[in-house]
Length: 355
Ligand SMILES: C[S@@+](CC[C@H](N)C(=O)[O-])C[C@H]1O[C@@H](n2cnc3c(N)ncnc32)[C@H](O)[C@@H]1O
Image 1 (cartoon, protein in one colour):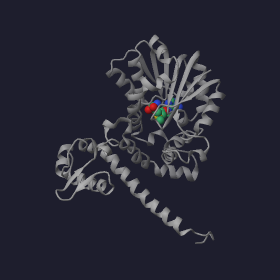
Image 2: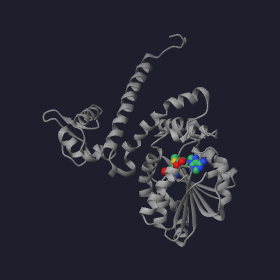
Image 3: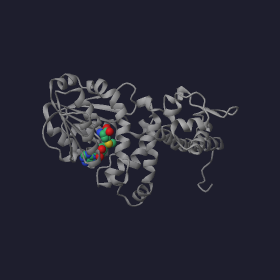
């Protein structure tokens, strides 16, 4: 050692062991992503112990690839293997975290982000050295993955659990109000609300033309006539509304303070701003036990902070935290703010803000 610091050999061994587990689990993440994208987890979930030939046939995939994938999942303890008859089995307790039927519990879907973030590693490295960030255009599947990720939460929780966090809001939506969703992405949240509350009028905005195109296509598919979508920067929003929502958006923005000012200006006097954002503290030391702590900071470095800095923005980062959010909402003129959580959702908090 050149540092002159004493090394506790037990601690060193323990950490080395942990890093081996990190290497294995990180690699397993890629196999799980493929398991999701190929549909292999969904195919295996109802199957009895089956050979790789049977599984490949059921999933309509190339057997050689399926066999190698099964090997990886077997040694990782995800799949059980019986050498006597060469069969593989996905226990239902594991399927419960890996299949599309698992809805918000499906972690394999989330692991698709590993490959997406890997694409920009060279650009992120460049930003570490020279500052700046990475443009949205560098993340080809972002809108699609984001919509898949949050859509399964909205499907089960938006109307029945998230909207009621604001007292009186379901009743007002039923009676008929004007609502705006900023940074709407592919607009699934807005389309669900427009469907659930046909008496209200909904508007979704985003800077992503592909996101807005997908949002319009879904609205058309659903035959909705009380929703519209436009490509608009949140910092330049106009019009007035009774409800404004922002789900997982503010910390990504280049101009979050200006956007919050614009939101406050666009809200009618008795209006509600419902802001869903990451559940975390603004104090690093309070995030150490966060169940998704390393994931949040990784997403921040590879996407959230970095897209904002890429536009010369504030770079709040994924983990800007509750204290900072409350301060920025207060600075924008919100005098009445409740912080709420939906049971079972460890990722988000919801700020119910009024002026
Ligand atoms: C993390 S995604 C959230 C999307 C959606 N609200 C959801 O819950 O799935 C953030 C969204 O903010 C959009 N966005 C980023 N900067 C924006 C800006 N200045 N104006 C409008 N939208 C913006 C991105 O294009 C992206 O769709």
